[in-house]
Amino acid sequence: MDGAAIQALVLDAGGQAFQARQLEHWIFRHGAADWDACRNLPRALRERLATRARIRDSAVVTVDTASDGTEKLLLRLADGETVETVIIPDGDRLTLCVSSQVGCPVACVFCASGLDGVRRNLRSGEIVEQVLHARDRLAAAGRGIAPARLTNLVVMGLGEPMLNLDALVAALDRIRDEEGIGLGARRITVSTSGLPDRMRRFASTPHSYNLAVSLHAADDALRRRLVPTARATVAEIVAAAQDYFAQKSREVTFEVVLLDGVNDRPRDAAALIAVLRGFPCTVNLIPWNPVDRIAGLRRPSESRVDEFAEQLRRGGLNVTVRRQRGADRSAACGQLRLRQLAPGDASAPQDSRSQRPPDFG
Ligand code: SAH
Ligand code: SF4
Image (cartoon, rainbow, N blue to C red; front, top):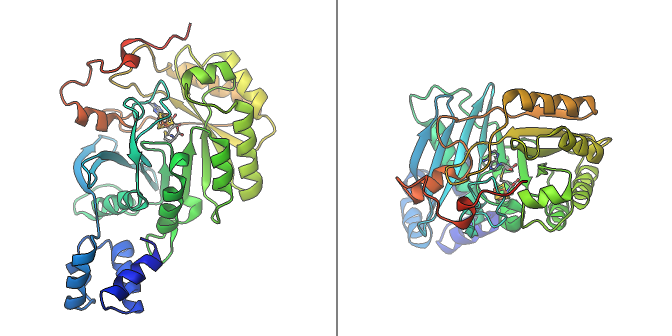
């Protein structure tokens, strides 16, 4: 619910407008998970509210903690579906990675999230609740993670956020709101597999979030093999990213998931340089995290990743390399959910894609 809907709810339950604002503070600022926690609301009002609405619709079912402090939360939604949200400590940053859909329809060949297609979009509240659950976790006693507050948010979990744009924008508005969760737009990054029309619609929304674009390859034929459902060309995707930069003055990041012998060759770096040179952007190289059910792909060696990065730098591009986090656990996004869906059977091929390794000649 947005502010107006919460106000209507409270008025309908016999409360007043200022109590609606108090309720928003309880839920989003203080993290109240049930009505009794909203202590300065009269008991009778709380009881009437409880018959009309629930504060939370999802629950944490599994917490998977890696030795580097990364925590993966598996959440069960009201209809029994599950999504992942991941708390990633990194120096003085504490980043939360949230999901936008249950599964993903884009079906990139290297990704666990799209292996079983998409089940449905998340509602905006289900996106916001991922932040609330993560904050509960951080508030729990006895944790060694510093800082104790979330500093950044990335929409890089399950799903293609641009295919759930209205709910995403409503959720980000809620997460950004200074009266509530208060994580500013500058600290929020949305990652997309590259849907130019949606990227432009996203650019036309009022707030300036950071944009990350999963490019993976600058050659159209190769990119289509990695992102088989993509309809836009590389040139169209890069043009939409440039428009986002022009409109928002926010530097765009291009993500490249590096696969050994597939898109990590000198000529792949040269193609990226040719497409991105002159555009003030950053290329984030992500060495592939292996996925149980995906055969035929390999993570490149560290030296290959370094050489690739160096070639891009010599070509004039800003480059960062993502260190693998949560490596001893289900590091790849979507992997924890898959393991939960098919416990004990994680290595068994269950769809045609995993039985037949992708053909990269
Ligand atoms: N659907 C959006 C956002 C979610 S995926 C998108 O594709 O951008 C977030 C990032 O994780 C993308 O860059 C994606 O390519 C990357 N990714 C997915 N599976 C991965 C894996 N197994 N190893 C490394 N990166 C992966
Ligand atoms: Fe979907 Fe992103 Fe995974 Fe591709 S990489 S299948 S777009 S979640």
